[in-house]
Image (cartoon, rainbow, N blue to C red; front, side):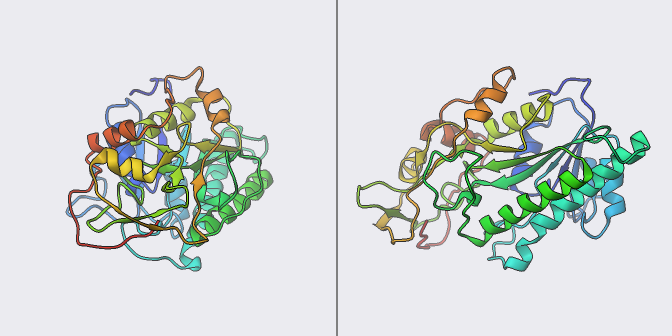
Length: 321
């Protein structure tokens, strides 16, 4: 995978997270000026080791603006994720960082535009392309396929936080005259709660029809290719679902990976299916290098295994999804 030599620098905020780790692996030889941001210096590394830009986007807006200067695009992946690296539940207050980080990114882009054009007007003129990571969680239990235009109905705190981020970012972008793209990303094979969260004693919900929960998925390699293509697209919609076509049963995914799980009757509030409508994404990629094959358990597992994202073993734990 390579970016064209004419493409300017790309700033990736929150690059020490799980998606950032995938992109660092897949874009290692992409031939672009990639600026990887994280809040803390890697253990034992110098401040500028391995191309890292080490600063807190919320506490140091000057450093954020400096890192954004001259960029062609900013991809914001930053924000706390339940069960992520910290392995903890998150409060609504902590999850508000998603909104604050998105707004900080917009302010930095506006400063870049003003510095490069000498004016604060003109939608998108002189400003980097802005891609803000959202989540399929904003849809809640709405019946699918879920298009980008349906009303949002998040249920979990994480989905509520992402929906609030989207609303705030859209409003502020309109005020600043900036163009943004909100990426509603489905489950990513290998860093999801199923393949990535599997452990001995894992238990899935089973519905009355015998099915396990079905979700929209995307493989980690495919995700990296899609994001690289979107960064280069001449025009992006303000909201875009990111997944491979179709929905995958979680039980089938674990079976393809050779990972055992028990099953229990699904509670009344369990969501049987979250399937994203990716018609808009397929249309955007029609003239791009990235392909978007239908999701299959075998292919998703293969992509996760190639990046060593599948678990080996862990203590017993009964996990309900």
